[in-house]
Image (cartoon, rainbow, N blue to C red; front, top):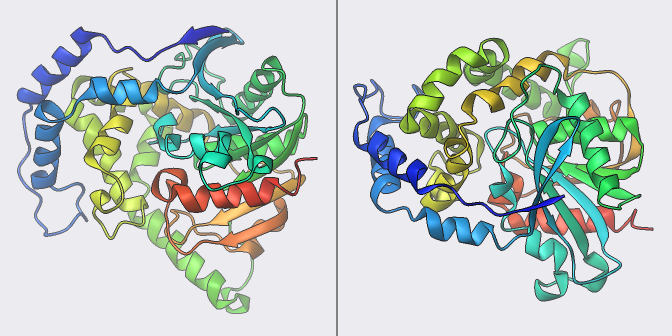
Length: 375
């Protein structure tokens, strides 16, 4: 274990500002909404703020309030936050992000989870929190050989938790984190229970006429997403290297690639700043730009995207928080064959980035679910 602090070199920040000032812009979109992608006007405004108003050093210092480390697992450096609770009997909890997110997603929930008595909870609600950066993401190493897919990451996370001395723990995840967490539940091992905000489930075969209204609505949403919302995943799962050249070279390209998804996937009425501040949006973009991880993060799609329907039911207790604006809004009936669901919560608001968007609701549900499996 090597202690780690985020410390982006001045040269990287200087280069960023230079590149932003020399951006070659496309013409404006032909529509009055986001249906062709992130609008030119908003993109220019956000890029200008990034260049002249955004203070990375203060944001970096805020992230460094969390204890961070690097450890090598199977030849790859893994970066992670390990924030221990002041309460010694706290339950170990591993939380995994996805794309286009990062550990930044959890900056508002780590302290309420680790120190509940300072944030409206009880001593019995306390967790020791571990938040790793996925391989190829953020400050984790970039795999130089293929094979770092969901299953291998799940095994690596088990190694990490045991290395930290946690012989029994819980796991939580959304997006790729949900896929990794699902695999940990399948493997059982030392993971006692899992909590998801994006369960991996699909509509069953059969006549749609036999479906409930909820199932028909979910199927319609899935069909719409497959038609209009999957271009990014097709590119990242088939040609991540080709995409990577543009993401590595253009900060505006990297920013637009990410922020458009925040606008589309959050419960934000089409404007990401209705939910997150500009600083928070750019904090997350910086996890990709400062580490040049556009290509390496996309490769996880190439490694694992076609294998997300892996067979095998999760038998450990499973809690699911169903947020209304999640990208894949799957009803409980689709999830039951895949998971041993012991708690299902239909959330009043929130979207894909649950901990980032609705930290209070997220913390409340995580506390309530793991209360049932702490002992």
